[in-house]
Length: 400
Image 1 (cartoon, rainbow, N blue to C red):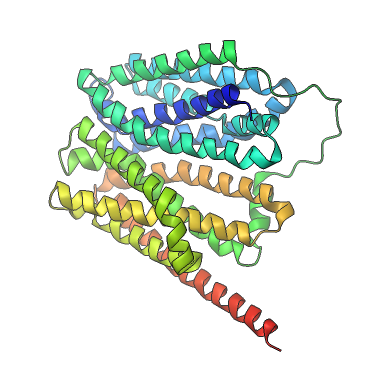
Image 2 (image 1 turned 45 degrees about the vertical axis):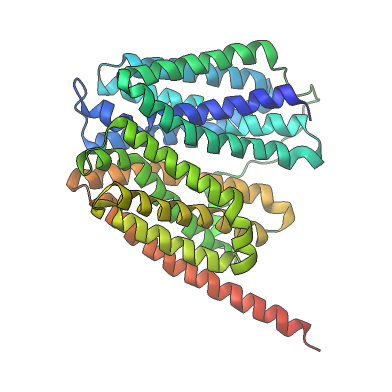
């Protein structure tokens, strides 16, 4: 496994999530002030516009990179991100904020290209390790981004945008001079017929046992995206927290989630099993969402967010693990694409819902998300019952 190209790919993905994390907790504060005076529903749309562009462009960049190479797409995405954050820092209207977030989403839709680069440059035995670097870059970017954004905001809301732009441009320069093309020249091949994402989604939902898990996964991701889009608003309106405090709370949740997924999930799965862990995680997530508007001080909110980090931290990997276990080996890649599409769609719809609900009252994004998670809790009980039936059937087959 070549170290320096993979390090640059890691840096590219890390910077994408770092930029997203820097802006996310500040966006409501920035857009709410003069000269923008954006309403909560507009802020929800701003957050959703980023995810919508990723949903549209991620498969496009992946296909284009198969034809023109990985390097040009990665460079173009980095330059797009550089320009988007510069516009964010200079914006004087809500329209320009939308332009900034749309460009950032288009630039940040390079994850499939980064994954393809790793597939090009790693041996089969090292591929999982290489793909794991992308997951690590995601986690670290979302941990450090909000903390950096909160810290920089003390010098003005534009400063984090300029810093994010400078970081992206630095990565662009490093990539331009140091990243070689990974796609080998090859003879044109007849491409297999393309199946649309919607067709793959429909096929996946009718698969035995997988459909309930996909529905649960969508609801949980939708609820999390709703929280991410509106938490800075409730932190300002309900708790009167500063931008820095909000950024540190985002980072705190990121650290706790990383600790759960990096160290606690393995022993818990061995002790409880994925189906039971999904039930516990979904219920914890629902309860914590319900309590967010009602915490009486900082420590109560921090405790509630710890419960949320635990619930979300055990739920997501357990659900994806079961989806993988219930999918034939030759369809794993296709099912991964389905879950990524569902995640992207949930991250488009969740912020829109949260913004409109916050426009009614600051409690509504969290109370409605908690009710959705109670539906997911019912689905988790269904998943657990199906797992017990399957285990019982296997035991019966083994009996003489």
